[in-house]
Image (cartoon, rainbow, N blue to C red; front, side):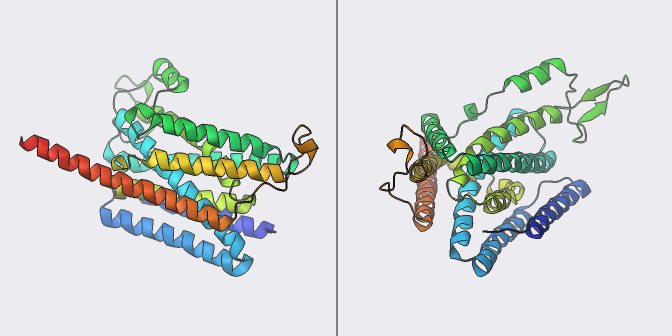
Length: 333
């Protein structure tokens, strides 16, 4: 794809406008959105992503559209896992419900910024060094193994890192969230940080770790920076509303980690096979491409990802339903 500068500019302006609208909604009235409000926004953002893919199909052809849809679905799934960690963080720091929208939006903005930086760095590396796909592939397989070891989502998935521990120890932090601001004046006139700052540090560092997973994954699907960026943008848009729409359902997706592990391992193998085709490392096939290595078409990638995530979701809901019935039966004994 040959993406002109004006297309990039229009896309970036549109992203800023959407974020500004979200900010205005929260700034005007901090609240916990209703199911109807959340469902409407989630449906709007999903429809927007589907329409964008349709536009790509019309103007650029089926291949870019399929790459966008596959990348968007993969990133959306990873973002749902990110939401689960956000939920654990907000529970750990007891963030009041009316301020959780603000936390989520700031988390999404930080994720967009970090992923944008990683996309630029990744695209520059790929254009100069094709062997970087070996590293990306190995990293995704390692991440998949880590997810398998973790198993079901658990509150132990989040551990306070050194930056959070330092901030809690070194900064003057009040005991109250006050009005949701980062700082507040004490009764003695001293400027204190609120726990909201600690929450933002936790969210920001979590976003950084998730960006390290998501960017190699999307580059395993498409090498076009514009598609990588837009897939990430549409995957992150609407997550704030999705958090409140799903509610307790997030806790019921007990096999999500297994599904994501399978997807990341699949993309890691796909990256490794692509690296073999463009191989230039001297000690592998004498520095020549390994052309007998199989190629995985984008349609097959899309089917594998949809099937894997669908099975993980259905299995999670069946297990959660059985566990609830068992608990209900035990309580009656």
